[in-house]
Image (cartoon, rainbow, N blue to C red):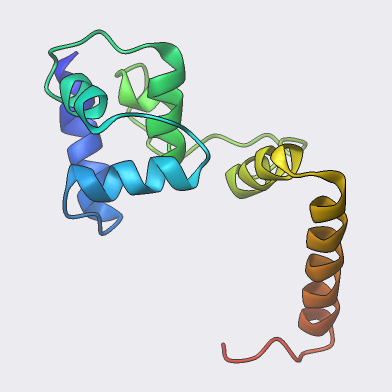
Amino acid sequence: MPIIRERVDGLRKQRGMRSLDDLLERIQEHQASMAWSTLSQIINDRRSPRLDNVEAIARALDTTVAFLIGETANPAPELDAGEPLPEVRTWSERLRAMAPGQRAKFVQGVELMLAAFEAGNAGPR
């Protein structure tokens, strides 16, 4: 899948990631576990990627699996009116991984930030 390398490299540079290390860090921020060697082998077409790995790379690059594997030329995720934004899906995944007490504190914090934002007190813009 040489197209994966081309597309990952292009998006990685567009997103300000200078190396595979930067991409791997972003993958891990999205709660995905992947070894550097696995990422390198996928990008350099030395390993057939598992779907979960391609999904993790796509999430880290804010794109779709379809774009990475060449099924579409559009790197932007297509969103239906009822489909949540990619950020919301990521936050949802992170919330599910939290203990109930942590989740409640997180939701409380988000509600306070939203109230401040709506009141016009969101800080620097």
